[in-house]
Length: 374
Ligand SMILES: [Zn+2]
Image (cartoon, rainbow, N blue to C red):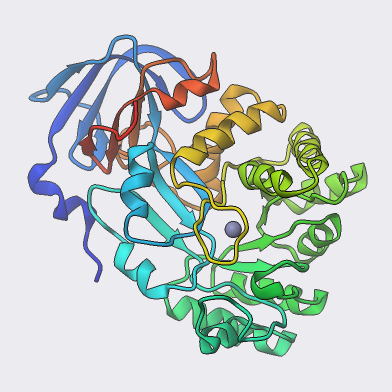
């Protein structure tokens, strides 16, 4: 069931003027000004608004987590309470859960890849998933690509998620190069972006060769060569490193893999590859590291700064740049006409990124509430 968030919440949305607030508009921090929240969108005219004195506070666009996995109905409220007003599900085995959680007024807005595209895997080997659904996820040859993409799009996929290389669920292998190439062509023909899970330098090369749009994770096995980095620059890919997850993986065994991950982020960032914030928040059976929705995006911002991003670029990674990278044209910035997805905090996050945790209030399309934290 789909509802229009603005009309569904319309009866209780107010007109609010935040006065004296400093604004990170998705690009830079301004001096004090007034921002009007007019129903579900950011407005211009403060006439008749309830005025909130926000001197000393900073207003950010609501944060976007560009890599989560939905696992239950509680996810949205948890994301919202931490200022994450948009979350991009990077594959789920519960398509009905996505249907249930879409377009909910007053809370976090989601997008989803629906089920992933897997290489060959034993359909009985993915824990907790019906073998029939796993079989639907498997794509073995270029000839199967168009049907697989069409199946997902017909069920509401907003983008297509490929597993490149090994380490998919149940030990699934990835596609071979011709199959990955065909999947990207098919997805683009359907007007959908392609996100590739890739954890090794080889998987990165394959994904870039196939022409995917977004590289999820970052190589853990080796530091990318300058030639690799230049291919990514030329290919126009965006990278969502998920350093929070990489740190969790490193904690299970070899701690050196996290250093490799951060060096790769630094090299990509220095070369101008857009770095977007995503966490891999999940509580999925079979995934060795579970991360709490919402809170871990603040950890991710801190790790991105640790890897060399400026505080401004870390904020952009979770707002303006993220929205642009995923074609979300109605959000990611603080500008009249955009969705009133907003986060009011106490400190200046350009001076210290941990200030994003000092949450005073969160609005999802104009529906404001007290945070669960801060
Ligand atoms: Zn993931």
